[in-house]
Length: 101
Image (cartoon, rainbow, N blue to C red; front, top):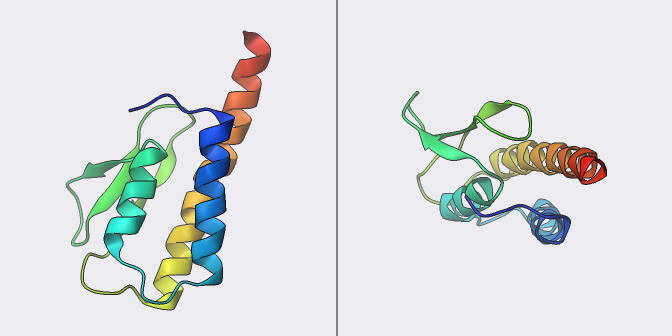
């Protein structure tokens, strides 16, 4: 996992907000890439591919990313919301640890 910083985080957040505005025709691969950038890894559980995060920042709920064709708009937005929560958690984590350095 590459080192997360505020600049990288801002780029991911901007991309997620863009997807949220225009969620139609999105593929699972796009979300899987963003989930991995945010420190999630593929976990073998459930019917759909699931991504979890074990380390910094605090444990986030598992995220399922269906992998069949274009995602429905509601599904895409739901995934974006979960990943934006990850971004918020990272921001808090980085700011707290920045203060400790």
